[in-house]
Image (cartoon, rainbow, N blue to C red; front, side, top):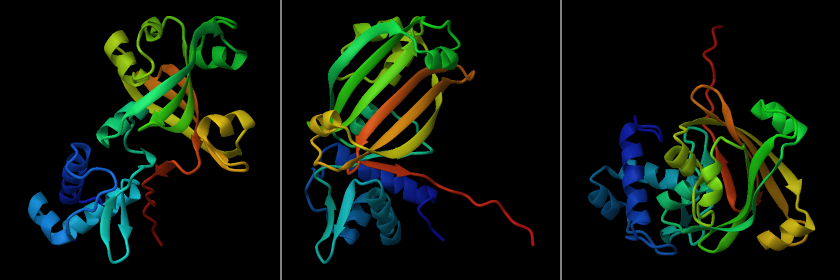
Length: 245
């Protein structure tokens, strides 16, 4: 019996996502009916229906009663626990244009907490990059990324308006990002965040702190990202241990 986790469903989901990313079905357009999509994807209608539901859960598609499936005009940014991708990579996979306004990019002294995280001397140099990040020109989040100076000093030489720090760490500095530990919490937006993210008074933000490691367990990056509450989706697959009674 097929489920959202079936290999055929995953392949159909990727194929449909590729069509959307390549502009076959632009944002705001109505998709063909399930029968036509099934023929195009060369899968059963049941598989197609699961693929549509998966992309709806990711915030890429929306179902309108009696009207069919539509590509969202503004897809939500989505983190999936099984996939570690940068903001830029997620946007690229969905056919969205990511851009950033660089609020600051500098070397500074590490805080005591940062020195403990990176295992460096107190007040040693770190690199901090703060950016207002956008999807198709819409402000989505304020992102602050910090790494120890010397880990990848070339970060300050690249175009941070469009670059992915994950990709730069790998391409420029030979660091292979392995995993990132996330902590999420809702917070009241500050006046500055309300202005930069275009929020209404009283709207919350979702704050995500992350600690990123290489394969040997070394911490190379810590980040704090404040998302608009209406533009972020966190998706997780939870499994229950087998119980013996």
